[in-house]
Length: 294
Image 1 (cartoon, rainbow, N blue to C red):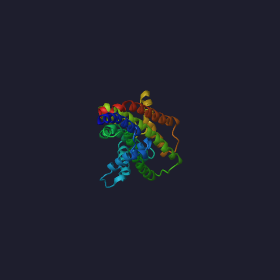
Image 2 (tube, one colour):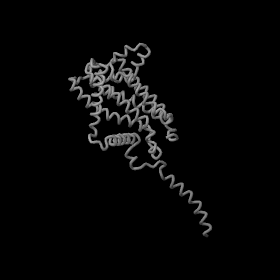
Image 3 (tube, rainbow, N blue to C red):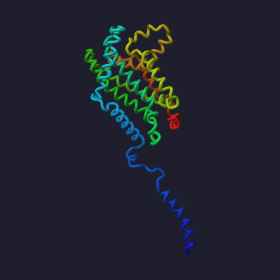
Image 4 (cartoon, helix red, strand yellow):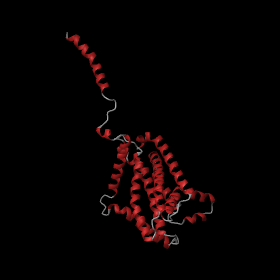
């Protein structure tokens, strides 16, 4: 009798296991994932990473976030003294304001692209353990730079008061420029972070390129000097320079209370869209191989 029952039990066991397996959902969802759908989970991760970077930057600092205001002020003071005294750029109207607006605009670009380029490499320990969308890391670096930029705007208002420049309605255009600049930085950070994983020399080369780019941009020297460049092709490149257009947009809106030229606005929009599209395509086509090189 026992020998008759045992084969029946053995035959029933696979069927029972199959029935129990079919009763369990193929993709189980944790309690946290249930509260955070895919899109909201990415936003949650972005917020937490920005908060972590912000705390780490000002950890054990006596003045803390005040440095985000003091740093552009001190840089403006030093550069104003140097370039006004040695290079005689003091004939530029509201030169300290001219300088600080360009400096903070350039700085948010340089900081976000430098950090964005290293974002995937620095996140390697996390990416090897946790499944998370990789684009979150370069985007987070740009958002963190934006937070510092917003604090540095306080320094701009301080210099405006010092220079006697009153706020005007055209300042409402500044957020438009900031959004376009952030899109440009996101696209470039996606591109650099993807290429930096495979070509580590880019990490060292980018600093040199940024320095050359900075000196080719009218941050501390007058825009009128572009017309003194002897070669038409070089002048055209300097006018097409993305950072020239973003800085001109900011200066016109904040300092000169004028609407930026249409060609400047079109250039800002075009560079943002081109950078975002190129960065997205390169990042998406390379991200599957990141884990093999980080």
